[in-house]
Image 1 (cartoon, helix red, strand yellow):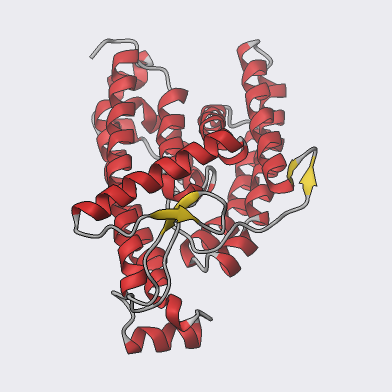
Image 2 (cartoon, rainbow, N blue to C red; image 1 turned 180 degrees about the vertical axis):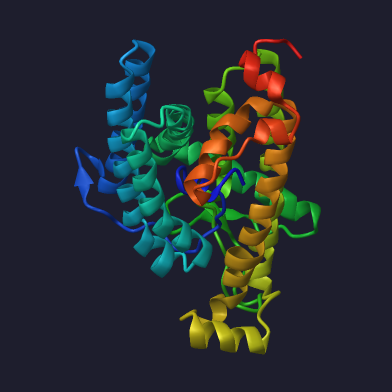
Amino acid sequence: MPSALATAGVGSAVGLESADALLAPTVLGMRSTDALAWIAIGAFFLALVLQWRGAIDPARYLAAAAWVVFGVFWLTMVPYYYYDVQSPIETLLALAALPLCTYTGYLLYRGRESLLLLSKAVACMGLIYLPAETIPFVRTWLIETTAAQTHYGMELLGYSPGLEVGSNGYESKFAFDPNETVTGRTTYIVLACTGIGSMAIFGGLIAAVKAPIRRKLTAFALSIGIIWFLNLVRNVFIGLASPWGWFQQDRLVWFMTTYMGAEANRVSFLVAHNYVAQSLSIVALVGITYLVVKILPEVLAPLEDVLFILTGTEYDLFEALGKEEVRADGGSSEQ
């Protein structure tokens, strides 16, 4: 995972939820949460235009304001992650986003110009993620394609429940017979299950930095391919663990119902999704980041700023990894 900030700044990198998103008020025909995200991403891009035209100070001030709006957007998502998804990791990340984003805006306002590159990365992430979140036909295609691929993965393991329209309105529900399963519950694919959040993180980082196009394309293809495969494995795992009750042990049921407010027959899903899969997703994102850095060390520049935001300490990742020549030439040499 590039950072907690990058994860919070894009969207959930994990998901296969059994609850719909909260219904939010609308602004100009879209949910208010989506509107906040579009406003922030639009402001980031406008700041980049100002930077390109040489108006550095106005660019910093506008990007600083965009970071604050972005933090407010993630704060509005806290109730959804806490009550509907019941995900401790996503709830904590959403809570952390506001102070982190506000601090980033403060640093930009005070003159840390290098954060304009991180702002560009987040803008590119948003440009990848938000169309999938807010444009119906893109969202439908991603969800139903992911559901079909996940079902195929189940078939390879000897399960063939079929697909049907779920309560979210997409043909993405695995049609297990509730009378034949342990929990009597099944799951259905939502947008977070498509891996688009993780893809947006790496796509945004790769798009933002200056480097030869061949290396950028290689890093992009590698990261997206790995994310797609691991996401498919995760979906199959959760999609089978929930109806067959792989984690429906008495002690887990007692703990989850007593301390986490879970429904008894939903425990296997919550353990598989919110604890096993999300924890492994973080490990996977760290590994993918390592591979991307090997191919495209230029992404270390925004990551240095992320570390400064999180720790208050300056790090020279280029020197630590022996990549000083990349910092010097801005990625101009073909490798």
